[in-house]
Image (cartoon, rainbow, N blue to C red; front, side, top):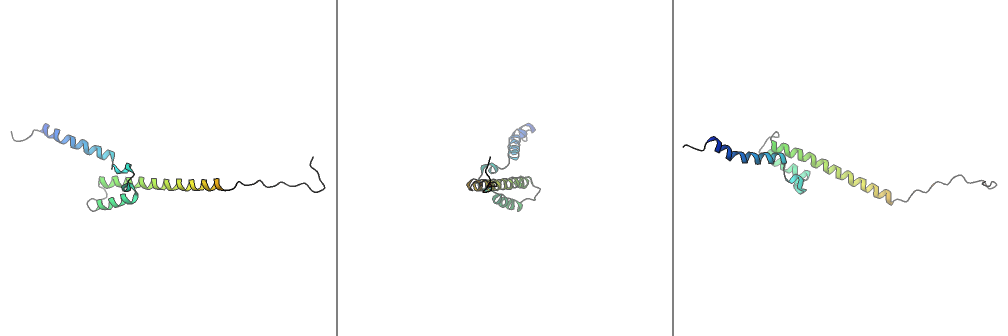
Length: 112
């Protein structure tokens, strides 16, 4: 026999293909972890490192570009929420407006 048959080759290759498909579907694990690599700056750094090796149309770079967009959206959302919370705290801390006094009766007039 000269080598493994085609069925045996597929049995060896199939687990690797399944693992690669799972990684591609799941994306980078750090994107969900919240560590410094998931910050827009960390993702940009990783993209620059990958651009030394790959072109922008490479799937790995495309995945990082999508993660970068999501990270920027999340950062913008957090900033907006922070500003809204500060504004609400300022409004709650401000004194309540007093109602403007109505027209007072003239000295000679009485209310009936």
